[in-house]
Length: 589
Ligand SMILES: [Zn+2]
Image (cartoon, rainbow, N blue to C red):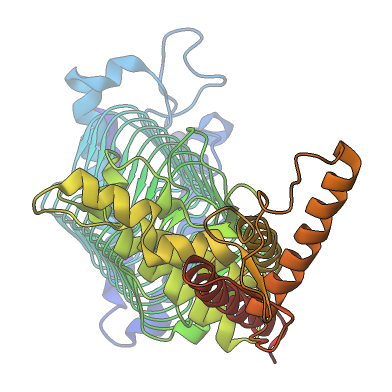
């Protein structure tokens, strides 16, 4: 106690001396003072305590200064080498007279610094309470250790605050704290809760390489200039809800081991998540990206949710890894997302097989050829996850209508994707989405009214759209209508000679049928030949009917044969039209 008083006295002298010359030429003087005063101080201390003064070098930044304070007698094994009370890890300074002495010296350094450097480098702090204080000094907490809670709540740092490499062993509370100048937390380690709720960073701030071992709470923090989080490591949840980034925000190669929540965050300038890793869910819902948003090479191992977010300018999803570890969960959610410049939104070399797109407009977003979509079985085109995600899932909420999947909403996605690929002249991919669109229209049956199940069944199985699917895979297959056409020809060739229908040779009175050409007196061979001849004539007649030929030798007998032939003509001409349509769809330019 006595020592710290003496120290304080001497320091005051030194400070007063320097303060005398101060008022005249402030900026020059100050830098001179700093460079002059401090080496003097340290030599002064070394003078008093000789080599016996505290040997800790205080900081590589702002000039190396030896601490030189009087050595503190700490219990054995606490410190590696004898150091002063400020640098000692002595647990007795958590309370009692040692605590008071520590505080006194701390306040003295802070007071003496005025608006200049307050050196707390490598200090080992017991509990520190600066809540609500105005701190005018340039604070250097570089590589300091806070053994107990550090409370800076509602404090204001009017100058540079440097916490680089600081270790917070207990809670660190910076909520509502204002940093008027640059703040540096690079390489700091927050062992317990790190609380920056509603903190204001008026100038640049760096959390580069910072480790948050417990939840990092940065809700509503205001980053008025650049915010750097490169290689930051959030080992528990990262809370950045409603944070505001007025200038660039850089989260390059940051790691989020648990949930990362950026919902309602506002990024006014560029934001970069290059190579960042999200091991659990990442929430960007209702966030605003005013300038470029870069997710290149980012890794999402949980669900990444951009639901309701707004992209006002470009966004890059290049080589972004969407690989949710939980089976059946969506990889990326773009439901209700808004793209103001869709042409500037790029998806390149990404797997979108489990991405959700409902209620957002993907019709003009750029998908490069390396985008991987989900497939539907049987080689029947591409599918989006909105079609198969279990509707009870949270992310499928917007897909439900009356407890059922809203197939029309899914159809809309396919429609937009079809339009998207059509406009890029990629008709093959567009066709694959066309199948999905029509399939959704088939599945979107009636939802209320009488005989609901019957009408639903009818819509699904035999409605026009269902028949369209059976006939030509909604115009995607030209082989299918051809096969049907051949089948119809064969079928009608087989039906025409049935008893009661019959083929009629021109001028003949009786129609020929399977029964009429069979003569009971003859053997098997001639009879079978006669049947075969009839089948041949029937085949020709069937082809005639299909090709609108009239003056054939044989005609279907009136009335049943005529009806069958008309029916055949209708079917085959429809199928032929479908065939032509499919050909056109496949080979259009
Ligand atoms: Zn020291």
